[in-house]
Amino acid sequence: MMTRALAAFWLLLVAALAQAQSTPGPEVTLMFVGDIMLADTPGKVIARRRDPFAHFARLLSQADIRVGNLECSVARSGRPAPDKPYTFRAHPRVLRTLARHFDAVSVANNHSGDFGPQAFAETLERLERHGVGYFGGGRTLAEAHEPLIVERHGLRIALLGYDEFFPRSFEADADRPGVAWSEDEQVVRDIRRAREHHRADIVIPFMHWGWEYESLAASRQRRLARLMIDAGADAVIGGHPHVVQDTETYRGRPIVYSLGNFVFDGFSDADANTGWVLELAVGRQGVTRWKAREAHIDREGVPHPSTARPRCWAAGTDRPGLCIDD
Image 1 (cartoon, rainbow, N blue to C red):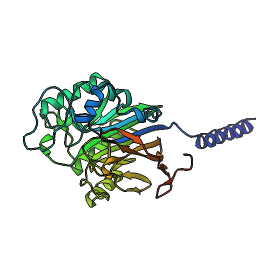
Image 2 (image 1 turned 45 degrees about the vertical axis):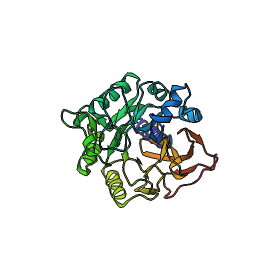
Image 3 (image 1 turned 135 degrees about the horizontal axis):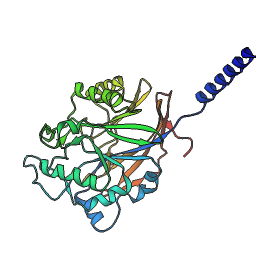
Image 4 (image 1 turned 30 degrees about the vertical axis):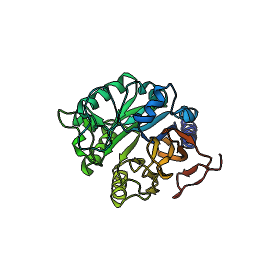
């Protein structure tokens, strides 16, 4: 009797393990967009009670987590940096609109500090007040390098942000608000700490890097992207060049070097008025698939969906192709 009972137990255990392996685990959908600049004309659009995100509102609402790069301070305080030709500060009214469509923003960029550390600190406070998470910056250097942990469907997702485009004077210090600057050793430590200390299932760095208006990523970007994946990143996403850059797969993990602009005015050429809305599906095993949809930006800096077919990538493939379900 004991032998039969033991055999039956093992049969049940094997069946349970087989079912667990064949049953997919929890999946989370993230959407990333590139540069969001809510001063100047986009700010005026919001002041007139129009929504610059309206044409993508339905799509964004379908994601579990919506993320963008906030390419401006949002404050009343501060003075423009005297040595910069372009400085961006949006009126605080824009945050109500931003919060309707985005769960988190990276503040690691070369415009977050345009109006000084006081305006940057005010920006962080206002983001908190509106329930928008942020990463890539903080009130101190240590806080700037902390990941934003977002939990959905039982998955813990760590978002990290880094700037490596000057001025470096915007970098946070021990007692000064600012952005997280990209230093290789520190980036590797942050990724590993997100896994080990914060118990993240998924780690995604969102980079501000590369040369403006270049459609191919620079060798520096490629080396750092691979270093981050070797350190444990599940995907690497970038922005700053104002144009979409190329993509690649390294160790089965996607690298999207630049998403281009999303909400931004003042550009005349088509490439700078074209961006990507990137959808990532992630599970405990990492990124399972991604989809990139094109956005065209009008003279007011407002994005509109393109008629172009989205590009899709699935785990186990090296290059994206046209999506078959669109």
